[in-house]
Length: 390
Image (cartoon, rainbow, N blue to C red; front, side, top):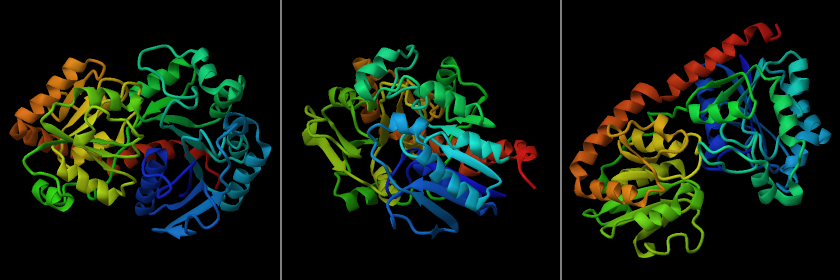
């Protein structure tokens, strides 16, 4: 099958998010023998024409300002995307989170060409202009405060109309699917992401990893990774981290983000996948304390694959990956007492954490391999075969 994957961005321009999932999905599909193309936004020469057997096509990057108008109104962007589609003539298109660059106008004409379109929602941006709270109804007033004059009153209606032409809308967690269903989107299904467990595994011992990173081997070390900010739980973690622990922060950290514990924070910015693997090996426990509907944090999967337990938020999709008290622990990060007690428990029970980490690796092998994920994705693809042109 000739498959075209669409994503606004792609590694190494981004280290995580939907772009990384799109790339790893493409690699897996290529290994299965499919002809895979990727269309993304990028400057001329920013990506090779072919990488690991996958053809990469680019259209120009545009500023994010006014993106909420261009994504649904720009005829020029539609033509740019459709020109690539018409040149490739794919059997199927799979788009991943198109909030800023590629837009949605191309979906209808692509389906009119007889090409089935699958869309994966990696977040809430199809119906909101930013993060939303889990279990709290989303209000237009929130978006107006965020965007002001860039707020487009027609955006959500037009996105919903475009997505109605998709064969299926895949959600990365039930938490996200339930939220999107409440906003009126239909034809939703959940396929949780998987990762390459041959790559994501403990490569070196904790002692060797800490020696390489010059981290004291006797200290309990927690890891906080990804996009760092208040909504991701940085404030909660700053307040709750016990005095006798260190914190590895892997991501872009704004000045003053960890004011109380700044002397116990080890910062590593712009880490590659290989470097992240070393950081997971060096830590005792990963912490994912998001205070919003975090759809399905990849950090949970990577940490567990590297045999590290996870203290995960009760908000969003983390609780669909982490088994409470088996592969990690589910906590309310807004409850400072609960979060601090769980962090301290891990400090006091490092041997028990080792057992939980081994459970986590086994759980990943049983439930979240890239192979298992691709099997589910391929079933969606195969169900669209009657729409594939011969």
